[in-house]
Amino acid sequence: MLLAVDVGNTEITIGVFQDDELAQHWRASTVAERTADEHALLLGGFLGQEGLGLEDADGVVVSSVVPRLTQALREMVRRYCEVEPLVIEPGIRTGLPILTDNPREVGADRVVNAIAAYAAFGGPVVVVDFGTATTFDAVSERGEHLGAAIAPGIQISMNALVERTAQLRRVELVEPRSVIGKNTVESLQAGAIWGFAGQVDGIVRRMVAELGGDATVVATGGLAASNAARAARIIAAPASWPGGPRLRALP
Image (cartoon, rainbow, N blue to C red):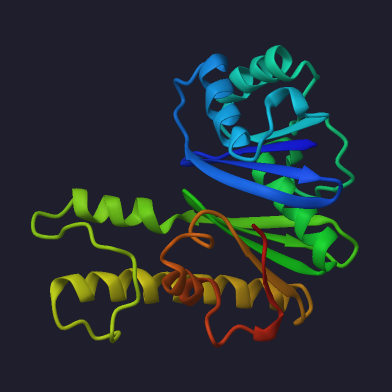
């Protein structure tokens, strides 16, 4: 059993692989104060639902953008799994050439996104990760990471809007009945959903053009897998994307 742990700023995603197949996965909130022992309880509880335990892990891979949790998970794996974790960090050979000004600046989450998308669909490919930030990573036909665009995520943008205005409130991120909202809730939903769809549409269209006009587009991240599935699809797959049928998803 291979245990894969992806630590984002908002969520931790845990996956279990049997051979090359993703057998099960779970999501939990990211809490920077969790200790190694608390992570053992969390991950052990998820695994226990499948009749597995931390001791069953033959290997553990960790991708983390929260340095404090990286160390806690490293300690947890050594103590409870009794294996040395593979932590995606500068100096680890992943097979992905990173052609940016400073490759060490590219986050582990974006590195693994690029590797997974290229392995699954080949290149060129654009990976859009809907997380705390919305990231757009471009991978060439030869599997090279060419660069990225980074924008505020939809959730933190909505939170900022609510916190900085007196009469607006948080709303559920679902598709409104019309882009022309008839009330405050629908107006906020229309601005969030269709506004972010336009942002994603514009950035992806320009990236695809720079990649030669033909690329697979891959959506991943918390929003892409959220319960607001219809809203996520609108944002992740605007109708005007070139090669619309080539939109793909990563868990």
